[in-house]
Image (cartoon, rainbow, N blue to C red; front, side, top):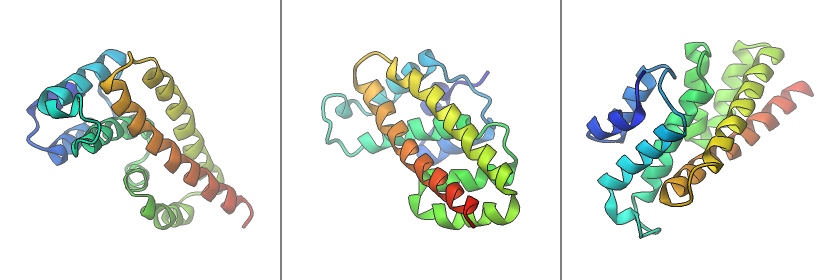
Length: 165
C-alpha cells in the first residue's frame, strides 16, 4: 500500500505531493507509524522548523497533515462529492458555495450522512493524532486536524440549516 512519507520524499513541492495523495483515492497507509514517518520526512526537509515555531514552513506541516487526513475523511465518496469537500476543507470561504452545490445535488439525508461520516472519521483520526508522541510531529498534526474540526463544524451548521428550510 502507498505511503505518504515516500510520496513526500519524492515530491518536488506540495502540489506534487497533493496530486500523488489524491491519486491514491484514499488508499494509503496512515496509521501512527506512517504519520511519524511523514512528520520525520517533513522535519528532514525543513530542519529549521524543528526548533523554530515561527518558521514559515510550519504551515506546510499543517497542510501535509490536512492533505492526508482529508483524503481519509472522504474515502469511498463519489468523485464530485469528494471534490466539493476537498474545496471546503482547504478554503473556509468555499463552504457556502460548495454546500449549495451539494444541497442541489443530494437529498438532505445523503448530505447529512456524508457530513456524519466525515465527523466520525475525523474523531477516529483525532484519537490517533493525540496518541502521537509529544514533539514537533504531533504539533504539526494537531495544527492540521484542528483546522479540519473548524470546517467540519461549518458543515454541520450548514446541514442543520438545510433541515429547517
